[in-house]
Image 1 (cartoon, rainbow, N blue to C red):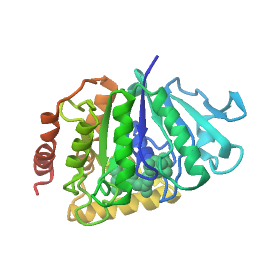
Image 2: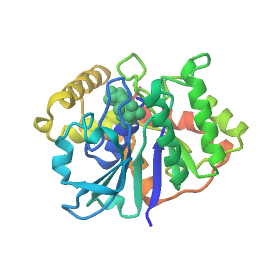
Image 3: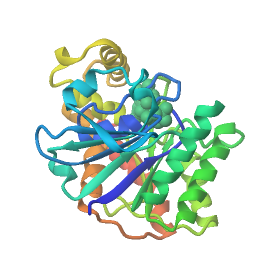
Image 4: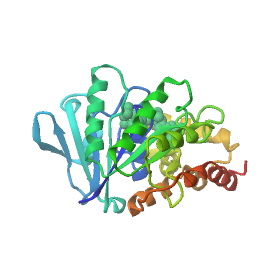
Length: 301
Ligand SMILES: Nc1nc2c(ncn2[C@@H]2O[C@H](COP(=O)(O)OP(=O)(O)OP(=O)(O)O)[C@@H](O)[C@H]2O)c(=O)[nH]1
Ligand SMILES: [Mg+2]
């Protein structure tokens, strides 16, 4: 059985973007502010041409779709609207030992919000490892969304399962928000909470259990190889990221550098290598300076 890694977090914080970045291909739908993922997305190893298995509430027997046909369909319309789980079987070496699971987000309002949370809870229960995605724009003292994250950190600790925290930078369009650690308090908040709840998260890349990344940059670096392949919304998102990068790097956007700075590759290596062990608080405390040194080495500021 493959090692099951579930990406969890609040709604619209970049779980599906992270999943696509780890697979270096766009399978999961990305949103624009409204809750977007409502079904479990399982991404596991398969052969070229394997069908996508689609499950809904009514039956345990899946309906099969051809992968390229499935990706063209509108997932917000019936029959796909009432889907509870989609299983992708992909010929990707990175999935030979692990299975990645994209989940609906926590804390959305309305009846869909409660249903999304129930599905995400079940995904936590059936996972071997949890990747909690925390955006750098949150976890500020006094910010309402922080409470939701504290609850999720506690949920990870209580699950007794190994977990790591990934900080992304959803607010990259704003000044200084391109740095996943642009919010000074974020690591301290997470550390204090994990410590208080008695959790022992797993260090990524032999280094720290709180990993910073920018999945949007990784996605940009992959798509930049062939921007003509992008259509519709993807093109708009690509152009927005390009403008953002242009500003930060003063017109010298080097795709390899951006990819390296996104820090997706070491995260993927960690996940596929299953280097999952526990880690002490002193190791956690080294993170901030490690990230600053890393950034200086790459962009020189
Ligand atoms: N700049 C930047 N934007 C990001 C990053 N990750 C996600 N985003 C943006 O955040 C928005 C939401 O991303 P999704 O991947 O749909 O978020 P999600 O957590 O899967 O959302 P739900 O499915 O609703 O729970 C999109 O507009 C993404 O482009 C990141 O690392 N950097
Ligand atoms: Mg999603």
